[in-house]
Figure 1 (cartoon, rainbow, N blue to C red):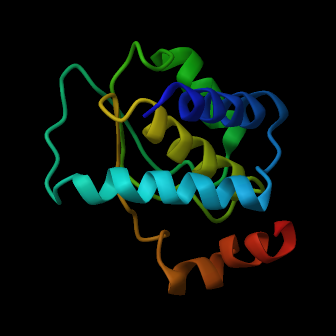
Figure 2: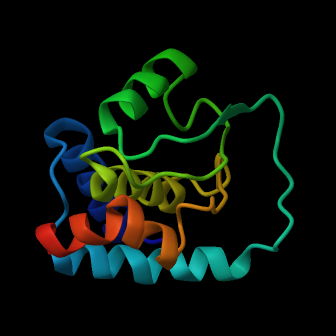
Length: 137
């Protein structure tokens, strides 16, 4: 990733961490394109470097996610494994999943993101993420 992209991603991380507001739609599209390349390069079975902090079920609770990084250690100083269920139930699912994807893009060797059952179309339409996306975008 070139310096310009790194600075852009750092700006998104700062925005999401400090303002807890969604990225603009154009930035989300850019983020998704970058992340898609990274995820396409990864195998379906990921090796995770120890020691690692294992996390799951953030469910749109961005303030809890921020607290988790305070307690567990900031990236890139700590390895993280996120087990899924980033969205639904909380009020900040868009911001939570955006921050995690930004961190994956920025520190791809230090963070592993798995898909949980809430990262599927059927579940998000029942539990709120779909509606949150419609409201915010």
